[in-house]
Amino acid sequence: MADRRRLGVCVAALACGKTVPMLELKSLAARKPWKLSLPVTEEGILDAIVVWFVLQLDDEHTLSTSPSEETCWEQAVYPVQGLPDYSVKAGDTVMMEVCCQDCYLKIQKMTTLSSDCGMDVGDRDEALSLGNEAELCNALAGLQTTSKPDGPSQVCVLESTEIALLNNMPYHERFKAAMGKVLLSLNPSKDLHSMDVDGHGSGMNPQESQNKSSLDMAPDPLYVLDVSEGFSILPVIAGKLGPVRAYSSIEKEQHQAALAVIAEANHFPKETLEFWLSHLEDESVVLQRPKSDKLWSIIILDVIETSGLIQQEVMEKAAISRCLLHSGGKIFPQYVLVYGMLVESESLLLESAVQGTEPTLGFNIAPFINQFKVPVRVYLDLSTLPCLPLSKPAELLRLDLMNPLLNSSSREVKVQICKSGQVTAVPFWYHIHLDEDQSLDTSDEFSHWKQAAVVLDEPIRVQVGDELVLDVQHHKSNISITVKR
Image (tube, rainbow, N blue to C red):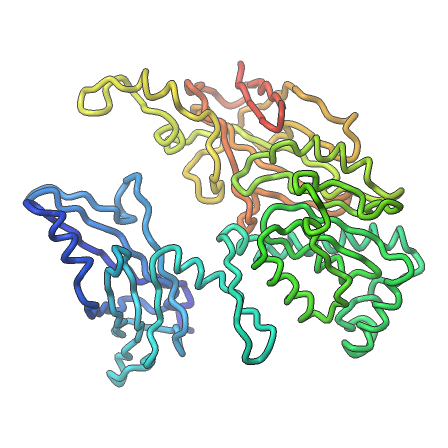
């Protein structure tokens, strides 16, 4: 069986200059595209070209941003697209054309040469342009929407975090189940399966289903408002669940156009989806009644940022939302539990503050630089973070959007040490409960959310069986954690 491990081909780009570096860089930018061939050393699937740099300081000293080096630099990744076959094996050759147009490194005209016959198996006349980072994001995120077969196309550009959200299947499945339960409770005479707009549950063709949905929805639709950040398809999912009028708070016109095309492709009646901001005179006041005599059945709020922090003013938004809910209506999520644990992580220490008294060629800069350090590290990935867990996860705080009486602004939590070491940080994450049955864990390896961590000023030496107290404070959407013996 072939080895199906994902394979990234690595390229080292060298930019050097000893006497006239600016002239050499200018000549590099003006140079015509050149060919580059790389031998394949391992069988797998060609996913991407990984690029890093080597800075030649002089004849003896260099700095490399290679992934094998422990540096502050990251690498550039150029995903490969458009090849007839992405499978490669040892002995094959990957051919590409490289240029530095407008001072941006570009990789184009990707082809592969098979070792069996020595012939090009991926040659194409047109170039596969993998341009600078911005162009690459555009290519990955482009959703071509065409109103007519030969009409002009409109490109929808999404952030990488938005694409990660769209790929988060549990997120959408949990929301669909939770929304379906609420809508069914408010309209028990309807069968959610029979109202599925695409017709799978009813045996109707899409046109019949569309006509029936329009008739069912006309008398008394239920109103759903999605005020999540960025590009969200939750209004489209809500529209599949029955006689619903879903409102999206998407702001960008290209995002609205893309969502409208998605709704149309799924055979939605046009009145099913509306863009809420177009109904408002003041866009800053998003939370309003859908109509003067109506209330919302569901309001979807973004509680957790992708970075791992709590959204600002989320509890204030929840308070307003509760006043706009139909009897039996719900805010999603209903409540959020904050979890954390004690860890020993040298990498978090090194990346959060200057360590030691004279770490930089004898200069004592730590007392001054550390005055400006940020106490909370964000955008962490706990599944790959080098750390040693010293305790089990513990519930630190509860944020209830439907029942604020259950909330507290401060809490002390006792945590027992299960492994000896030095406590250097407290990573924290969230269990987002849409209702009592459906929840999402933001620390899940495949989640689009990242995690955050409070890094201690001074490590605490602990032994198995010790108990530490975490003083957790929640104030104006900010969480602070203090560790005490």
